[in-house]
Image (cartoon, rainbow, N blue to C red):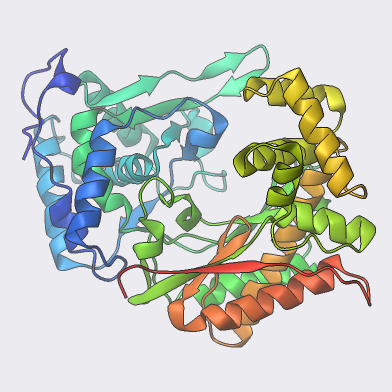
Length: 449
């Protein structure tokens, strides 16, 4: 194991460090079913990847995380904490010493989850936000002990730290991320962290004037009743990166929202990690809406079925690739004007002639599809409603349903059930009686059954 109490080194990130990864991961048996090949692939990915970008999508708040009940993982984490203990001058006062130990473990587990999901952990240095009743922080955090841990890890050159502050266009919290040595040591524990399932289960992002003071939706609101029922039922179950399922509104509660839980941030494409996790110790399946937004847009405003592969249909007409069309459609449905769409497309490498070709092909193949009017936010909200209803149906029928953007994860044995409930909910939300439009769903079964 790396000795973290060694003297500081300016080339710490460039040295060769032993890797703990396969040992803890191989023993995450209650939430993960790995193969030697997958462990090696994951190790290599972590070793070679760069630090995350310092952007909103790569940020996560510091949260009070704990480790799942597992003797081997507990012992492995204690070994890491013991090495880090050597960096500190421990106080004789018992209460403060216990607070410092707790804050060290909280920070280490947050760094572990950040390393696993490639996200910066946000640290609020405003002391008043740690008082009773403050959000997102709670009295579980000792402000002075937390700051001591952050400062000590920074001085030991074990974390990167970008200072927060107030700027012309707003404010930014301090961001931390482990250096490569610590990242390699900690990321396996990120899979085995859990967060208490407790309110608020509904939040508002980018609130409009007047909504920024709203902390909780009326008790009788159906969204609130369903989100509380979902979290209360899920509390007895176990999955990787367990945390609350939250409905996140955009601007206000009338626009609907998207359903979020930390599980959905797990690696899926670059390394097939998420599909190899477990729910209550059982293999999972992911059930996904295919070409979700374009299908919903056509169904809502034209009662039209998009066919088996709308992206391919447009690509064939435009004589381009399916991925090119998918990227164009995503932006064209999300932006609220041709100008904003063109600017966003240009930033993704789409040029004027290419944009015109794709727009013309889309309008030819699907003339009823609304482009450049901000439809994407509305469609995301409808997806949230669909998934929330499927999760709630799962609660009524004793099944765990975890949201993944426009898809769900369930136990593999419940995959067919999930597909049926998702199609029924989609039709109810998107179709008028007699409409021909229908969703298409694809199911991915875990590779390690």
